[in-house]
Image (tube, rainbow, N blue to C red; front, side, top):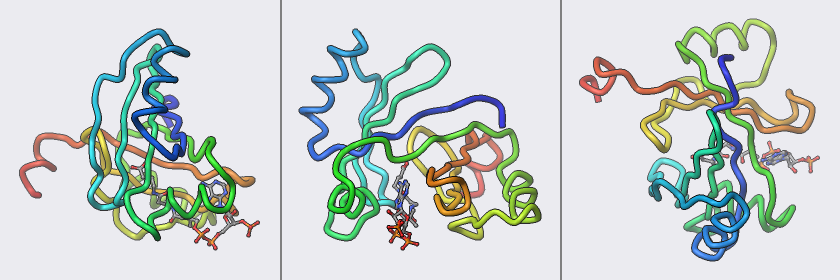
Length: 140
Ligand code: CMX
C-alpha cells in the first residue's frame, strides 16, 4: 500500500455536499464523474497527496443508497493506492482477507479498483486502487 489515495464519504445529495466540502476544505472539487459499474455519482477534492471522494447513489440498490439507508451519511471507505492491483489482490487473498471481487473493476478517476469486505478489516470497507496504465487502457 503506497498511500491513502482517497477517503470515500456517502452523501444524499452531491451538490449540497460539494458546497459544504468546498467551504470546509477551501477548494473546489476538481472533477465530478459517474461510475457506471457502481451506479454512483462521485466528486473529488484534492487534499495534499490524498483526496476526498463524495459519493451519491443513483438507484435503489446501489452500495451507497443501501449504506445511507442503514447507517446514514458518513465515511464509507478508505482507499489505498497500489502499484499492481492483481498482485495486491493475490497477496491479500493468500493472507485470508475476503475480497469482494475476483477481478478488478474500472472505478472513478482512471483507476482499477477492488474492495475488501469490512468484516475482514475491523469494520472498515477497504478499497485497493491502481492507476490504469496506458497498456491496460488499450485492452479495454
Ligand atoms: N463500511 C463498514 N461496514 C459496512 C459498510 C461500509 N461501507 N457497508 C456495509 N457494512 C456492514 C453492514 O453494516 C453489515 O454489518 P452488520 O452485519 O454488523 O450489520 C455488514 O457490513 C453487511 O455485510 P453484507 O451483508 O455482506 O453486505 P451488504 O449488502 O451490506 O453490502 C458491502 C456491504 C461492503 C459488501 C457492499 O456495499 C459492497 O459490495 N461494496 C463494494 C462496492 C462499493 O462500495 N461501491 C461504492 C463505491 C464505489 C466507488 O468508490 O467508486
